[in-house]
Length: 284
Image 1 (cartoon, one colour):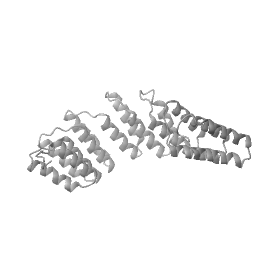
Image 2 (tube, rainbow, N blue to C red; image 1 turned 30 degrees about the vertical axis):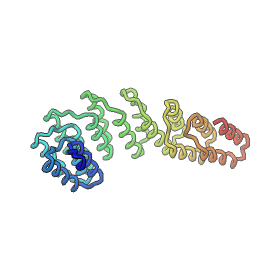
Image 3 (tube, helix red, strand yellow; image 1 turned 60 degrees about the horizontal axis):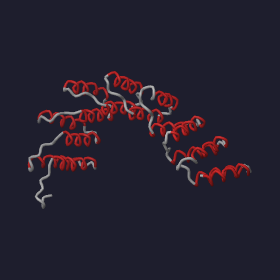
């Protein structure tokens, strides 16, 4: 750019600073921020500040992140929801959730309403802390304030419920999503399918798999292999054939799955079943 007499602008510097922060090179990022102001007279915008704040929050330097927020106010740079969402995320990650209401209050006083990203950050933080009650309250608060939860809002809770072994609650939330005006997506189905498999709820998992395939969604290959393996271990051959037939209508099934199924049948000396599996393999 220098050789072509092209002057870098705020987008140029913002891109470089974002990359440096992503690579944990905060010192270089701050040095570049000062360089852009002193040498090129380019003022940092909200995107530059957000990148620096995210970098600081990732290394636990919350005090410096809040200092940057104060610098934005001093220099007349408008604070947006992304800035506040970053600070809230940082607070929640280090266990300072009691300070979140104060940030939200300041946010509202500055005429900046929390958006879906802000609420999702809070939902994620509370779920990571196993505070599911607060996460559900955030969902209700979003609806009350006219900010509709998106599928990410629900998937975050689904995922953390599953990690905590609460598969029944996860299933209830999944079933409740359409009533709440949010249709489950492929991620929702994959989360629920995985947790039902882990919970040995094979019939329910097979039902979710069929619905998933009907909607045009594909499960993770690793999840399918795990599911088929467990059906084989349980010698649940009826459900195994049903699952394989469903998978035969998609591009998910592979030779390894058929080999597993044939091996199970052969061990049981059920030649007629083996023939059926081979026929299915040919038709697929």
